Length: 245
Ligand SMILES: *C/C=C(C)/C=C/C=C(C)/C=C/C1=C(C)CCCC1(C)C
Image 1: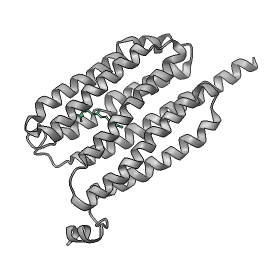
Image 2: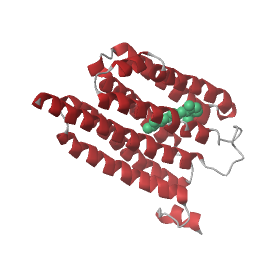
Image 3: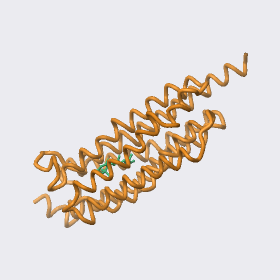
């Protein structure tokens, strides 16, 4: 029996597709970290910190995926604690990416604080709804969504969006639009996964919360890092042309 195999020797059974995504998540996060670290050498100094943060995001995720796939293999239950520890570290780092990208355009600490405040509300409420009082997961999901809305407001209508619009760098301007699209559309996969919790709006659906989260993490951590990478590359190239002229 598959489950017995897993309990006895921790192997990945054929047909355990959620387990597959924990393994591919682990390996792809690790590969992405190496890519960002190596490519960091090819961008101008002022973009090197952004590249390092991209690598840290995927590396922190790789380490947590290593543990999460272990929990999944042994129990076939959601590794909720590791999941939220990972997000608590990686989501604020994504806020720092916004700050660093907009810093040459004049970003201030207040903008960063508002993004981080929104993240804390979003993640603390999400954790309470998943792990502390699951019977009230709808209410906590709504509070968490309010935290996400603070972030969306800031990057679409708040100071961050104004700074990006006023930036003199084409690479920053166009890359910023892709970054915030990830934060709106890519991040929407998480609440959809959450709604598959028992008692929530999509609980009868055939989906699985860990499958949704694993796909979302790959899209949002690796994809977001690649956008930062393309901004750094694009800005480096145009900085070279302008200094040669
Ligand atoms: C690398 C990890 C990332 C980008 C994690 C993002 C997580 C979210 C956007 C979670 C959002 C949630 C809601 C908006 C409502 C329901 C509860 C959450 C925490 C799943």
